[in-house]
Length: 385
Image 1 (cartoon, rainbow, N blue to C red):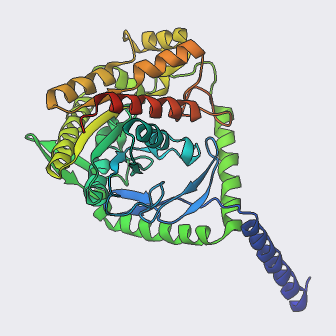
Image 2 (image 1 turned 45 degrees about the vertical axis):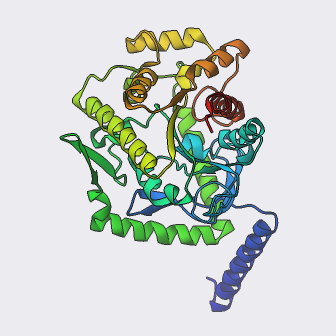
Image 3 (image 1 turned 180 degrees about the horizontal axis):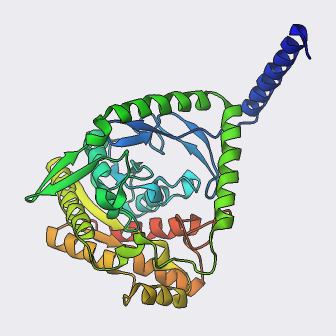
């Protein structure tokens, strides 16, 4: 049995090895921090000033600005002569899976500047997991103070609608807006509870410890990758899209009260965002992003999936948003048709990565490039300033 001296030597050796590993990881720039934290206002938010590598899907260096969003810092006052665009979206637009310069909003900035012949300042306020309710709160608390010329809501029909209905989404940390008698009211009851505050304190403490140590981050990343690989291996691979998944009810006209409420609340939130943006002196537009099934580069797979869902096609959510936008006087850009045409012509996967599954998940670099170029062309063609 080891004596006290041996125990001290073993402990000192472990500490020295850990310290050496920590120094080495910092020297070679390896960092896998936790990028988001719990907060009372929206349920969660990105952490300011963090940087590190994301490899859960794709691979990219992530750098959060001083407000916590995946973007560079922007001055509060708009640069002289610049046309400023604020992007609101979810994980499709936070775009952790691709390098920042390859994101659609970076490409949009470059292409639009060339079209306008002057500086364009595109600001990204997108956060993974956010629904329209959280995006409205972000508009109020983060976006409008920058006086953007245009607020561009990147609407992802893949989950934005059901994210706005507690009965469908059920996220214990998300805040929701409730529509009653035509009026929206914030329901943040879950973030006001003792349970949430204790969870916020505990999660914040754990995150702070992990984010302070590159060695702890490496251990966590190894665990996460191993777990994800195990789950991936366990998934059936016979079909690309499972028609039994409740999420895919988005491609149908609503059949339940929960889905009807989800759509009604979403449409009210879009009108509310329009009103508050216009009242602040900015323009408001919607851009409909693509869901993976809509642009899968095999029309037979798409037709088979639609048939299994009992629908003629997969464009119902885009058609409904377009109808709402037209009725509400909101300019809207739909990416589904041009991106689907490209995918079919070039047999190109616009979603998915080699380390996940092609054709599923988030946009890859090709998807982002096409989206940025398409949005830029549309804004250039329709610009009136």
